[in-house]
Length: 68
Image (cartoon, rainbow, N blue to C red):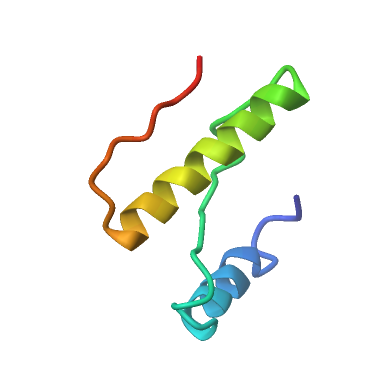
């Protein structure tokens, strides 16, 4: 993903602060916490994280059903 101390997080923080909140919902993913064995697992993980971020940002109360 990039060398340590290269400014990756700083750039992401800048984008999050600069982009219009009504057009973008940031989704933070720590790629060090997942080690997907299959692309489908990784894509599922991304989808779940995005769904939760959207739910939280929009203030939705219905729970999100996660597929096993």
